[in-house]
Image (cartoon, rainbow, N blue to C red):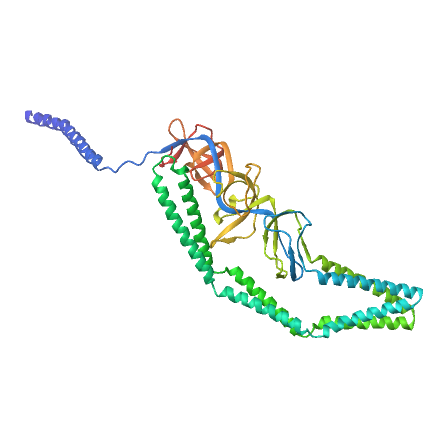
Length: 514
């Protein structure tokens, strides 16, 4: 019985101690593996970054480049070809609307007007005679009209005289010789003279430099006569070098082109002198002879109803002829259609001109800026958007303006497609003279907000196209997604129109913001 009791007490002790040992071993294992796990655990994820909603200014801009152009520019040309008798203006002249700028030789046109006036008077006299009865004076007038028409016809069918042909040939020869001289290249005599002038200028520079070097250490060296002499010698050398390069380069392409044109005109004039008369002009002259002959015959035969009607029609036709002749005379004068400044004169008195523009007049009192931006900036260039303009020649002055219009198609600028637009410019801001064609840098202000609520763009979460939300950090550290209305955006900040208040803290994810 005692042994059984001891065995029971021994078993009871084991039931008490064994669980304690198991717990101790478990705790030791937890501590051991916990420490190893801590030693091999991966780094913690980056801390959440935040930013406060603040107020500030945001501006959306695009940049471009362009040129200053007149608001109104007109290239003027005669309506008919002829010999330029006078170019009454030169580049830079101020002209008024209606002012005569140039005129052609109008001798033939005046003769045509005089003849048309005479024909009209004769037709009126004939009609008056028919109404009052024919008399010897009317017959004499009809005979004179017939003689004039026959003389005109005779001039057309008579070939050019030897002297006229000789003059045309001489004109062609002189123009061909002038062209040959241009094509021959630089004039050796002029080239030698220009080289000698350049050498002399170089010697003068060296002498002036040597004289200046002797006094260069003086405090007032820049204000001495030696300094002025060196500057003058240097300027003369640069001019001599430029003159030598010009002579060496030979005539410009446009000069050769003009010489070729003169040869072509002279050749056409010679061909016309050799050719048969123009068929249309000959036919018109023959018809005129027939008409005046019929008028004389009808006058000699006595008046009748048909004669009276024909006489009235003759008066009407000759009046139209006079109007056409007067219009042709008016067309020998080139008048300014607008008041402005002469930008170009491309012909001189004595030249034969056609219907191509020879004078350009522009209104420089109001200018516009033509500029270009990249295709990606199309949405920033809208009519009415303000612009700031800085000319390359005036880098310290900023001119204000606004976009006037955007051309409907892309243009190619230096091999790249670009958007072409036009902007006004406020010239009253700065009292300086701006020349047409000046290049400028343009900044277009596509959007601007002052004192706006701003958040970093990293805080925005796009829910759908054009729909955004942000995560607001609450006081307890929890995140609350809040829809917001976004206004202007640049590369760093976004304008919040609604949904947030100044001082709110928003999450920017793991991107640190300032």
